[in-house]
Image (cartoon, rainbow, N blue to C red; front, side, top):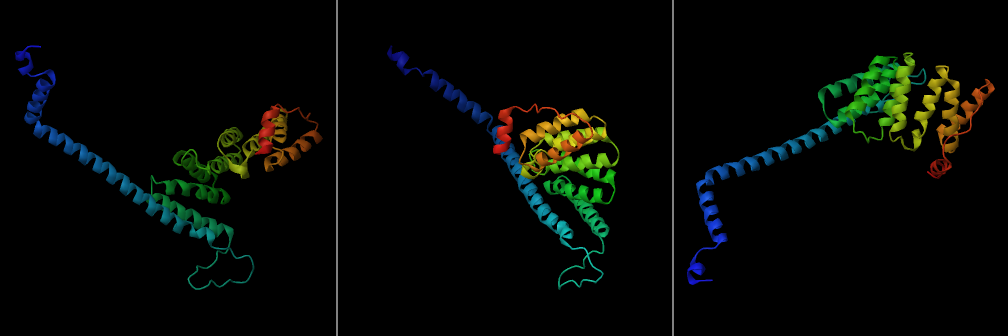
Length: 262
């Protein structure tokens, strides 16, 4: 390499000089862009912060709205005197459910879009169902299913309530679909297998007893130690007494062993 070549700037120096010149000319523009990014990030953080605060406030107020569930119902002819700081007991279950509906409806209206409002839809739906307002129950259960997290452990209960409400309206096809939805979500130990059991019940009501018997036989084989398994055994006995042939379970042995072990 010649001395002239050594004295000449190399490629990195040239690129560095060009970059420096470019930065100097565009310093104001770059500063503005960085500022926009910083402000944008700050806004996002503030939105998240206030969103979390909103959720926190909603959760606390949900607890207050649900206090109505803890108030007792008078079970005797004697008028119970509330203790200091307590509200008087309800005179009937109907009065209590009406109070639940009002409390949770007002709460949901004031906290739309929050997880707490979605959670409140479930006890609201159950109270509506007990009052015989099946359309209101369906609306509330549907909103819970739509708004709550898909992995919410109460999702199975919402599908079950939806199925019951459709069944009460005589909408057996819709009830069957709701119970199918129930069977697809995590139901926990308490409701394990109940989605399938409810499907069998609806099929019996539709006159599809052979199809129901197959579901019940599978349920009996795969979940012997659950409430659903025991109910399936009892209903199979009823179907057998009615002349329905009890089929062999289609559930693979490995699945049955897994369910028993769980």
